[in-house]
Length: 212
Image (tube, rainbow, N blue to C red; front, side, top):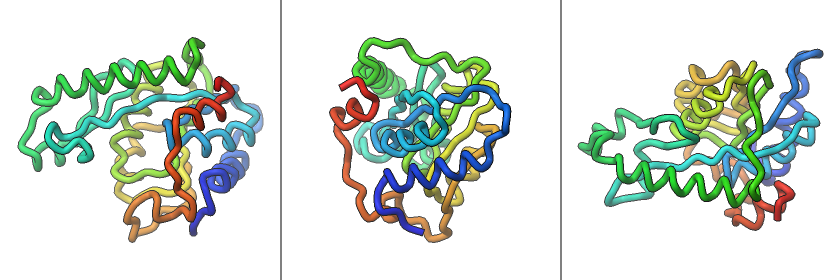
């Protein structure tokens, strides 16, 4: 299974979520992990007739190799680290405390920009659907789910078009349910499963959120 782009993936994901939605469940809210998750979540929100917002999450990278993710931070919950990645790097959570705080400051800045001054949506008692364009290791999604869980949703769902089997195993304990359209054994990377995987800008995100 491949997707033409994030829009097609979001529409397919919305159909799957509608099929599994309880007939008289709580009101839903859809939260996108920016930036790549926003166009997927936009279609999910349309399909569910639910409001769309963002749940900014930031990777915590290796101090000397920032592209190598060791953990992630979202909301006001403590940073979440991949213990195997930390051990392989010979680092501890304490070694990354300053990096984690810088990333938390950046995610707060992005939340302010994306929401245009609006408050974060209330999640208490609502079906909360967290959406991304794909799942590799799962560490950023796990951090996002923990932040959403802290807000008291009645049901917490992670929805992704494609995921690695290992990433799916990593996130299942953080959500009440996980909806994934495709989990290939030979995963590779998220972008492999899209014909068009163009990187998004903040302006793209703002347009989809209706705040641009």
